[in-house]
Image (tube, rainbow, N blue to C red; front, side):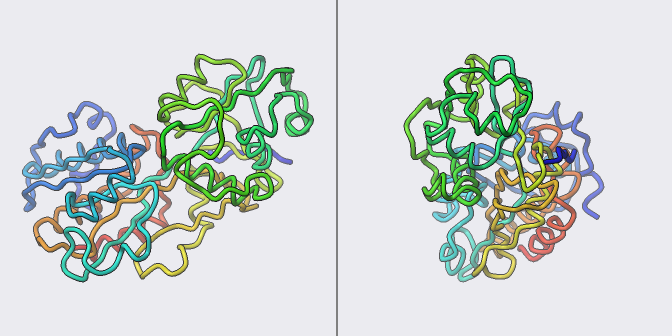
Length: 357
């Protein structure tokens, strides 16, 4: 194996990350525009920090607009959108195909909804192993660790992946989410697709095995920081200062970073059966492509194609233009640790956003 790492909107929206860091989420700006009113969103907690910085930048440019976002969880966000309680939802899982058509929430009658991938983040395998600073894993070994089938750090399978590493003769503690989460769904989707023999279970928001568990990514981060010989999966933004494993992909060993995470989306097709503009990515978790990190969270903004309230549609359209813009993606990456979507994907998203009204 060879080790590799990959390391015009309204002008006033080109706000720097430094400016946004100092803004309260609902602080109104001085920017003057034709937009006025309030829109509400709810959903993915993984998107929470990114939504905060997106909202701050948007409100700075549009002084008469308020955007509220409740990071209540992906399922709650989808339910609220479908029930018409919010203008848009953030979700780590897309709507089912039959939920995107017909009369949906606040959408114009029969207009339907779309899923737009605007938030990408590596899901990392963070570890705290006595005497180990660097760790390489493949999908099969990860599946065996988290199912409990592989329970010693000096197991021959791990030694073969990490020649020269001082892996201890110690029990592995693998920590998973105790709560249902989109992160768990994406993690188990990776294992099921990339290592089906070792992980036959279908992907699910609920982790299917017993063992050490913690609430939320912050809970897993706490267990890893305080533990020893422990490993867990969490959003990359929560793994600051921790050891993070690289994954074996084909003949490469790929570290999680913005470029390698974004690359998986560009080598993956749109899910079959989706209507035009419903950009749900069928992630190719089992890819052998170089410089691609397949364990990623792709999170969506769910919006109406057309809104029953035209003024609401205008605000949602303008907000999503900012979210998907290069500037919006960059400030989210700086503040929330996400991976900016590629230029290719941005063009597809903005083409759909341009039709929202």
